Image (cartoon, rainbow, N blue to C red; front, side, top):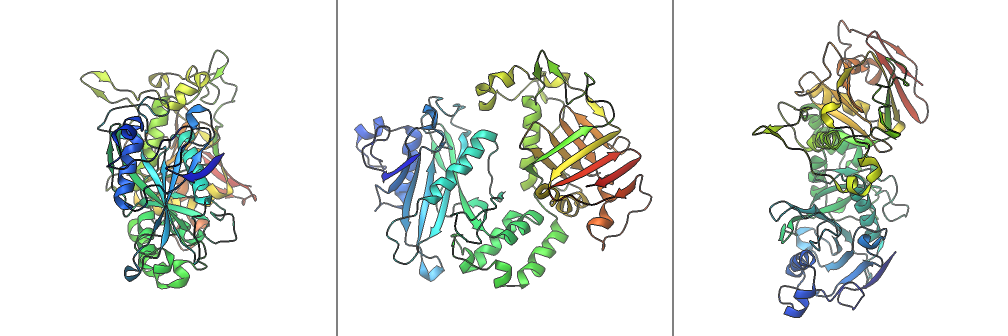
Length: 483
């Protein structure tokens, strides 16, 4: 639960919000990370020292459900001459390290990121006659923060979030989000590291799909050129009833379609409902990667595997001439292996951490046949995986949101892959890689305008899709798309 009050109002956990000229008594009592972010807010809004603030009644570090301690809400007058309308500016506090005492985030030094390294912002167009900011954006930001804390996946500029519901629970067409740098908030150096500010931008479904097929930064640039769709500061208008492609039909063909053809997609992975099974041997085999156990505990992703998969997803924002997957072997420096420090999730879930097999003991296995399963939304991204990624010599990863599994499709030009032309299906623990030729066999069925590649090593037996599940049965001798 949360309560709404001025940030300067007395409360059980938050003293008055100080600015750069706050009395020393307040500054000494105020958490240093929070004080640093408030300083940036006061720089932008010197006339609003005590903005309205949504506050978590029970803080996350005391067992509450909301990771963000506060969300401050400022009134921004905009700049009519620059097509920037008056709007409400929301700023979160809690994804970065506010306290520096390890109650929420592990302190790792002043040179790196503070906590997750960023805070969220949101700009909502102010309606005529509106005297106070709506509070629903604060709950939206809490929802995104819960995802970050639970998954430990961070956001980057250009990322997209498939929300599938109007952001304000109305009938609006604004049902998804892109993320970009806040146009006014500058990075802040706090005593616990650096904090940047990522702005949430509400978009329509068609704009989200274009961001997936091409890239988020490209769509953000188009939104900036259309005043009613965001303008220079990318202000969200929940009453917007047209997409940028309906406002300017030339944008789809002249910018997006050409961009996909020239650049491909820079989305290299998604968190999705997916799974894979090794059909090469019975699952009760004790050496099967799906059933390795230590005592009575099921085998889980090691920290090294998790970090590799996350790094694969992070590379979606990089368009490299020579794509590289993170290596399987730990990198060594001066003869010593440098492993990732235990994550917050590892430390809180003691049962799972006891079941981790050391990364070096998990062998890479070549598989004869695998069964891939995706839900409908994940399956709808397969043309993107093929046309926007693999045909441009890149890779694409599905990371399961319901378990430890991950599936990466790799093309011939990707270095560091353990799936090869000779062994197109390979697994390292629960991480499966599939080599590109299987998807080449789907070309005629995904897009009839694309040519069938010659001398395919597999034959394709095709059924069709169920309403909710896309299922592939693949082996070295055959591949089947079945319902």
